Image (cartoon, rainbow, N blue to C red; front, side):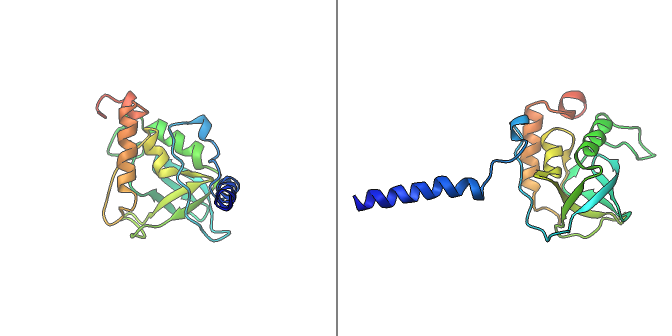
Length: 177
């Protein structure tokens, strides 16, 4: 009987505490195939306002600094040497819907900036890992550039999932496959 009481108390603790420490992610019911990746803890007030969308994988912050998302690549829309690529406008629009006018949290990998002086960061808005979301929904491809490889395997898995399910550019762009 003593063992049964102890087992009951453990089960009750699990039932009560698990939802507290691991809440169900908001927004999951609208996109059941989307895995929301929790943002790492950041200091209070460390978020930054996004004031402009450059393209599908680059944003500008309120301080004028440009940020390039690590580990992904969206079709071009602003390169003067290239025409707008298939699904480029859609990727830019989705990026705009996700982060424009919102406060984002950014996490560095190894590199501080790229050769163009843009910050290289993983970007989070609310409970959404933006880099992963764009790949998983077919708005971007995985693009690994060492030494910034922390989520390379995750992005490759997300790309494979998007491709297998014909999401986004994998459905709309004949040369994507």
